[in-house]
Every structure is written in C-alpha cells, then in structure tokens.
Image: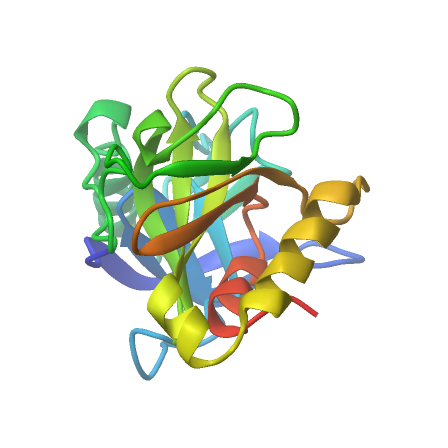
Length: 230
C-alpha cells in the first residue's frame, strides 16, 4: 500500500498521565500508521495503527492545530496536534478522503478465491467463505512467509485481519504441521486478550486465516514476520 501522506505530529498518550508525544505518521489507504521515529525502510513495523474506517474527525475549538479521531470500533479516542493550523487542515483533508467505496485493493497472490480449488477449512459453524466475501482495504503486515491485510466482511461490515500464506513456501520449509497447530489453537481459544480465528480457507496457491483485527498494536506485523505465532 502506497503512502498517501506523511509527517510528524504530536499524539496525546501515556499510561499514567496524558502528555504529547512526537510520532511520525504515514497514511496508507484507510490505515494511519505511526512510529516513534521515521522508519528507515518500508518494512519497519509501526508502533501502532489507527483504522480510519467510519471514524469522525473532530476539530479542537481550543487549539486550531489539534483534532481528534473518534470511532465506535476504536479502543480509544486519538488526539493529534500539528505544528501549524495549515498542517492540521492538510492532514484532516487527506484523512477525510478515506471512503469505503473508494479504497485501493491491496495486491495479493490471489485477488479472488472464486476458482475451482477454493476450499473452506473452518467457519465456526457458519456459512462457507472465500476471499470474495471480503473487501481488502490495506496491507498492515508483510513478511517472508505471509502478508496480513485489513478486510471488511461484505455481509456484516465487520472488520477483520486476514493472514495470507503461500502454500509453496509452507511446503518448502516443512511448516504444514506448524500451520495446522496454529489454526487449531486460534479456533479453540476464546479469551478477550487473545486473537480468535473466525474463518480459514484455501485456494490453489494460498492459505487464509481470518482473525480479530485489533488496531493500535504491532501484533499483525509479528503475525506476518513469524512462521507461526508462538
């Protein structure tokens, strides 16, 4: 996913008391990524991400350089501050361009799973699924063994993370038993602090795991970089 806008902003945060923290931000489609400092390359994992889908951008009447990002799906309200009012207007203008029907589809090994080799592996007792049931919105993790995307389930509007793994690489590195173990663990564990597996399916070239999307952390970058989650 290309970087559509970038720069330094102040983000209000802190575990015990709120303070402004300088962070480097990149707008990648509907996802706003941020780092403690400007990354040295495109594959450096961000400190956190903010899914801008269906969010509200609210200006701060007390500070023309500041605004908040609010959304029902977000774990908290994010407060950002630019150096100038002009910079704030530019950021808000770019973020406001994020529209559900105008998002670039990330490039994957298989854009449509509607081929004759598509097989549903796990649905939790629900309907059969394939890649056609999802709108892929942004790449949030890329590694040697897999890619992770933010995706919207078309029938429910729910947002998930989809982990895509190439079968050829899995076979080359004898990872099939590890992947099967990962799938089994994720589909059987139910805990508020552990990512759950909602669907699993495969095509001729790839395996897909559809997981909870937890914006604001690095988990999905680790999911992409690691062979299996341990």
